Amino acid sequence: MGKKNKVLIIDDDENMLFLLENIISDAKYKVFTAKSGKEGIERAKKICPDLILLDIMMPELDGIATILKLKSSKETGSIPIIMCTAVKEGEDEIVARNLGVADFCRKTATMEGLLEKIERVLNR
Image (cartoon, rainbow, N blue to C red; front, top):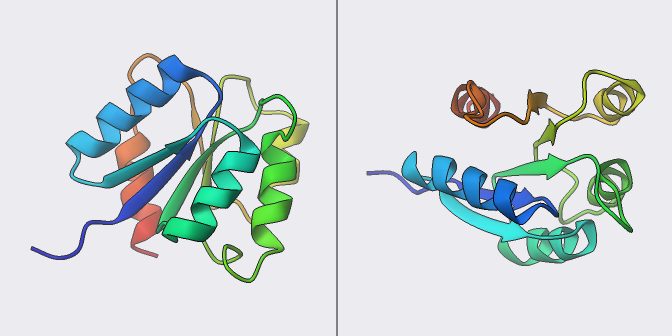
């Protein structure tokens, strides 16, 4: 068995964190969580995840500001990011794609298709 890929989930919604952590860890990934953009950036620098799942709408440091900080750091700039959002496609998604986000997923009760997106991004 190869190494487990590390996935960092950054989301201020504890219920969503719990859901995502369960889905992703059940798929045999090593999961880390952060409840804010600031905490997520600090954790990303420490654990060097293979992938980050990032919420767009968060207090203080939103998803776009978090992307900017992650992408501008030598330590975290090459980590692929999948944005998770509860809102329909909008300006934030366009901005995030222009900043190099690897993919998007819509927050739903089942997060259908998320694992396929994670696999696709990790295997690029």
